[in-house]
Amino acid sequence: MPEPGLSVVKYGAVIQVPTEALIDLAYTREPTAEQRAEAERQRLKRAARQVAFRQQLADVTDPLARKILDLHHRDDRGQCVGCDPGSYAEDCADWPCSTIETIAEHYGIELP
Ligand SMILES: [Zn+2]
Image (cartoon, rainbow, N blue to C red; front, side, top):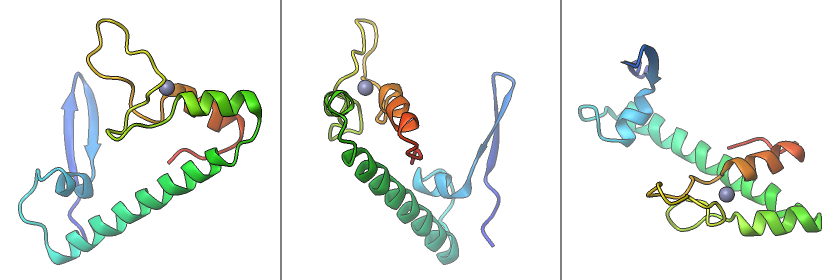
């Protein structure tokens, strides 16, 4: 059984960090073989959800939605190309951005 994750209190809120995330970020001691296997299972599950999400978005054919989806596509760093970060932001929005999430919600597509 994997160890429970870590609870972090930040600005009065308790944030639960799962063990898999700690392993992914190398914030924990050497993981056991079981923890490594569980982290890999979770990683594959997340990747499969991401692939399914992208495929469902690719299947949207409404012309206006298609133009917006194409504009707000994901770059190689996992950020939205279509969102304007503004002059004070250093990075663009993470993908899927709120525009993509709104379109996904409209079409009943579950977020990854
Ligand atoms: Zn965007």
